[in-house]
Length: 432
Ligand SMILES: [Zn+2]
Image (cartoon, helix red, strand yellow):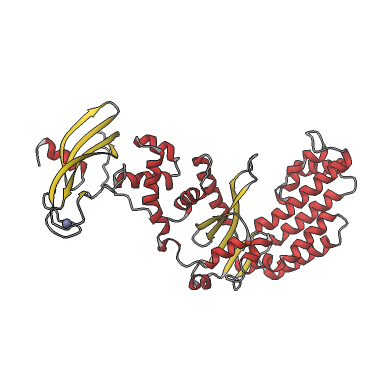
């Protein structure tokens, strides 16, 4: 083991291989090796097999001292001489090397970690390892899919979050394509996602879970869309549904925006321009009242004075603040009183958009108050949607939803990555 070849074998660390030579060529290190097994039995008839010939395979391994490595292995082919045996010849299997893969097992696992955990693009990792995109993706499928499909990854879920995000933005060829993310709100992981945002698809998804799993779900947080609410029945009808605060306030903000745009159009006859009083305060209007400073408030009031002759935008702003006030308290009774006040005031308003919001709020009254009863919200979902966005950015556009799903789940799905080897620490020498 103390000759050069023995050292090379130690460094390579792949059992069952004899290193023949190591060559340093431009751009890579080439390690030539051959398999050492001499006694092999036929997998079909269990008799001793004969060595037939050798075939050369070229593989990519982990980098060797920072340089890309090409592994050239002379694999043995074996043959069975037994009469009547159907197995004629076969190529041997080696530990550390999956059959029909260009990457060794450890290199494939590292490619998967780089793309999944660190959210790098497949193309850049493939280039780094000197393989093609398809080869790198094959490794991700081989090593990443078992990590995602591991039943221990999801486990029982108490609080479930259901939220949509954009999968593909609108293009001339197609409208916006949405994806629905299912989130474990306690563990803050994406447990699954499916394409679209329809009730039928959510129902089908819940149908595929085990009865025991469904029973374990106590709380479901959602946005204020009817599709998800109806998609929860019948399989998750027993759960307490929570309207997510972020989405409740978004309903109010959208209402305010609609009123502002309509008034803008009615008073000036065109869509908002830079100098228009209402357009200038569009962001101030949406800001929370307590986050407005003196100057901001003055600017907003001036904008309203000039751009809002019938106080419609002001009314919408007050209605928005009334909705926000529901979340100033943690007490469910106080919140109920505030919500009922808001609904009543809005229901009698002259502005149609405000009346329509009152209708929405009253339809979701129980779900809105369930937030105060359970403390659940889709807050973690928003963070995970950001993770999904990072995957989209790294992928630079997807055409295959299954690829997208695998990468999002690898990145944000709470996958247990094989723990890295922790070497003993080398400390720097103390100065004299
Ligand atoms: Zn045989």
